[in-house]
Length: 226
Image 1 (spheres, rainbow, N blue to C red):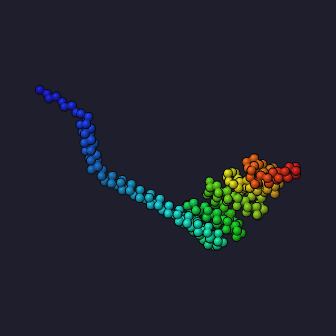
Image 2 (tube, rainbow, N blue to C red):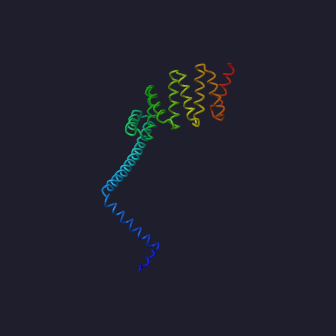
Image 3 (cartoon, rainbow, N blue to C red):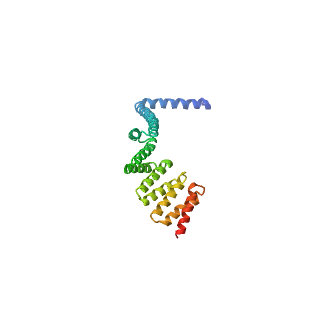
C-alpha cells in the first residue's frame, strides 16, 4: 500500500529553496573564486584611485585659490613682478582650476598697464576663448580687447569687441556702457546707422541706466546731422 505524500507547507518550501540557493551559490564561489577575487581587487583599485584623484583635485583647487589670493594681494600692493610670478605659477601648476581664469585676466591687466599690448591681447583672447560662459571674465576680456583696439585707433575692431561683450552677456551691469562705446566707435568710422542701432538698444533695453541719457544725446546729434 502506497504511503500518502506529505504536504509541504510554505515555510518548508521557502526553507528548501534557500538551502538550494545557498548550495548553488557556494558551488559557484568555489568554482569562480579566482575570477571573483580579481574582479573585487580591480573594484577596490578603481575606488581607491577615484578617491585619490578626487582628493588631489580638491587639494589643487585649495592651493590655487590660496595662490590667487596672494597674487591679488601683491597686485594691490603694486608689486607687479611678484604678481606675475605668482600668476605664472598658477597657470603652470593649476591650469585646470577656476583660479587659472582670474590669473589670466590679472596677467593681461598687468601687461596692458606696462604697454605690452600684444601679450595682453593674447591673454585676454585666451580668457574669452576658454571661459566664454563665465560672465564676469568673458565680458571683461572682450571689453579689455576693445579698449586696446581703440587705443591704436582700430575703431572697427573695438566696436566689434564691445558688441561681443554686450551680445554674449546682456545682463552684465556694464553692458549699456559697452553699447555706448560701440556706438562711439561706429561714429569714428562714419558708420552712423550702426551707431544709431547701438544707441537705440540702450534706450530700449536699459532705459534707466547711466548710459541712456548719453545715448539719447548721441542720437539727437546724429539726427541733427541728417
